[in-house]
Length: 421
Image (tube, rainbow, N blue to C red; front, side, top):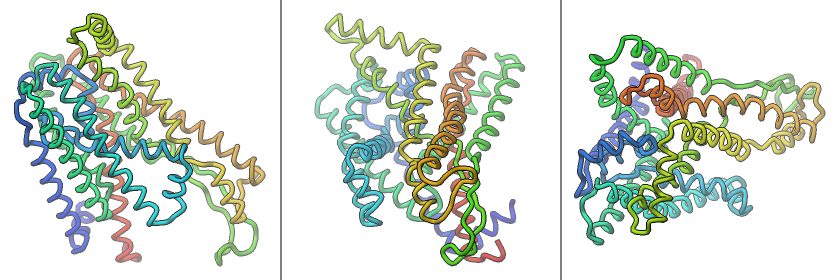
């Protein structure tokens, strides 16, 4: 392992790319620690520790929310804009054609639209978050101009992080957005360990053994499910296909086809009423305040909140898989290339077969994602200690990012010396 790492750093081009990405991550962490003015640090820490949803938002902001920094929401608005654009492809045929059929120029234009859409999302989300924090006394400034300046600053921070993410992606050593989120998770690790050891004197040994066991099982499970796939055998007619002698092959179908996207979708849905209720809980209208308090009470019920969260993750796992996996196109491409699934007729029957198989393996992947999403709630209920939480989503993101980076670096090494690697 050490020899492989040293081998990577001996290649000048890859070494320069890694150092460039590390330099950008340093810039990102500096921005995440520059706070907006008028923040009560003590109330902020207490508020985030009591709110599981905002703790999850803090993960996807790369830790910017924990300091109310100039990158308050991190890449959250950009992720939201990307999700909206993916959904719009199903409704607007011209967008789907732009992204999938017009080549690199079309994809660049699609990306540009996503960037412009990020700006209004950043303004709206920043306003909602600042309103919620002001209602909880976390932000003590009350002037309208102060609020406008904070919104503009946080929006500019999001756009800057979006640019950093694209610079990282261009180096082809991983996805820039994912790497920035990964950096925020790693940056929060020391404080998490500190809270962990602070409870050591007052917590039974069995609790720690249980916690460590669950953490190790989570890591093993995430690695296994990230790499798990179902191979569909594919046979080709006798003769030559594209200049290559035909034979048998396989079509890999990933068990977790949607990645971490369903969790992001579910967080967005669950977070919206919670944020709105938090902002209206002290409203002058007694009816509005009562409704807001009822919504808050619902989300403070761990069982109900966990059940809704789990169900939404499964629903969105199927939903997003249906967006990115098109059995009809795969069946058509196989038929054009002279390929077929043994025992299944080409065309419509192949499409139905792939659709059935994908639905079955997606159930396993979706259930796994749901368990990962509610794992912190389960651990807290078992241990009754807020400081001991297994961040299943954080582990899922971290493992996925590391695996993706390793694969891309290996690909670049193989391109330089195929026979050796």
